[in-house]
Length: 224
Ligand SMILES: Nc1ncnc2c1ncn2[C@@H]1O[C@H](COP(=O)(O)OP(=O)(O)OP(=O)(O)O)[C@@H](O)[C@H]1O
Figure 1 (cartoon, rainbow, N blue to C red):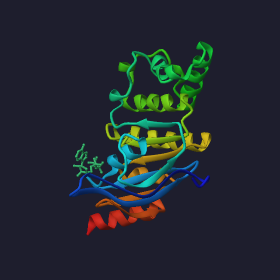
Figure 2: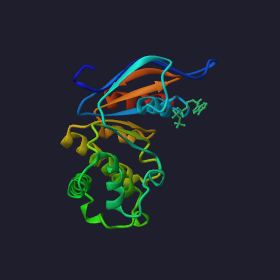
Figure 3: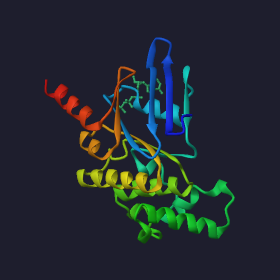
Figure 4: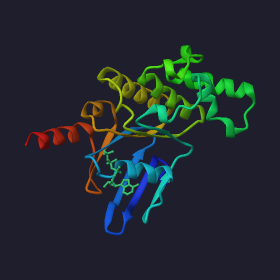
């Protein structure tokens, strides 16, 4: 992989069945240390692309190179947070890492600090807001020292203020910790907080680059 990219995808194609191609010859890269957003209409293949990057699906052709470990954040945090309290949930992701109890405590502390939620370590998960739950899911990835974050419409269930709060926090975190992040969204307002964007249409990556240019272009298309 080119060392300046945290994620590099080259001529990737995928079809659920031979007569239904979803992704066709997609090539793109997310520079290391940056947050890029992935846009595309319903059914354009965004979630399928994330599943390929996560390794849950295998491409028919093409290659994927990515920094590891990789962390995922889903639309609905209730599908992701499995333990009764915040601290226990973040620690749960570390069970396979063979760490001492004090190392686990240190990782939990650091990762909660990273998402500015240290004060919630003992709070039950059910008592969190949607935005706080998403930040705990992100803390779980940070605790595992993830280098690449994949976020599939993480603000879909949040109110408008919490949406922008989350994207601002993730951008700051990416910059502070030199992470690489790919964030799937339908919300054009979120494009104000990323370094670049990709536009997926009909299985092709039809545009990529400056998020404000893509935003203006999509708004013009929507008006016409
Ligand atoms: N498990 C599956 N089996 C067969 N076809 C699928 C499966 N999952 C998705 N598809 C099809 O693949 C295409 C792309 O779906 P995908 O969910 O990746 O799109 P998307 O861009 O994420 O959409 P949305 O914005 O609505 O979440 C769609 O035509 C969808 O019906």
